Image 1 (cartoon, rainbow, N blue to C red):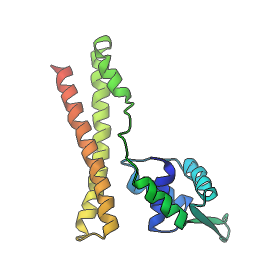
Image 2 (image 1 turned 90 degrees about the horizontal axis):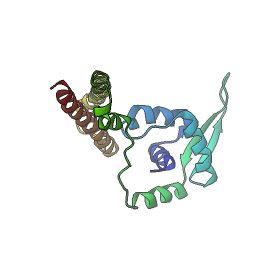
Image 3 (image 1 turned 45 degrees about the vertical axis):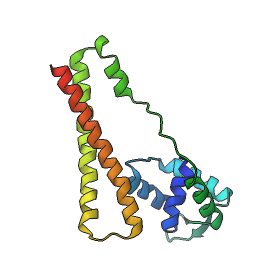
Image 4 (image 1 turned 90 degrees about the vertical axis):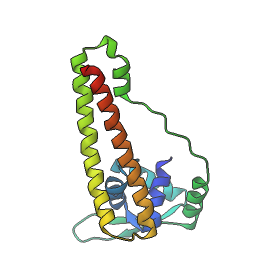
Length: 176
């Protein structure tokens, strides 16, 4: 997926500044897509040049002017076309898997400590996602957009749960 398509998806919901888009990434997309503010601002320039969004400069008192972006019809068409294209799984590049593969040649105590540390990282992320899930579930019937957002959150939850299960399996093996 291109970062541009993730940004266009955010702009489908409402007009937003680069800062607003960055916050949206942090709050609801972090379980499957991350981008720095610098990457987002750079991509917004490209999106605007492609005609997929328009920018309106909003003056502010005592602060730099705020640039607010809105998706254009061309942007909606681009997003629609992209959504219809087949997607492939993202290739995995995971240091921890290489460390486990090299386990026979490493200090077993160091490997165990690293797997336990990673398990804790995933457990913390899972707890964060489950807090967000509780908020979703407390709202009763969700609007359509929020139902789709919840589905992506569920994927993040399942991802973290699977990491924890795998770490537990490796820990049990290393402790045996």
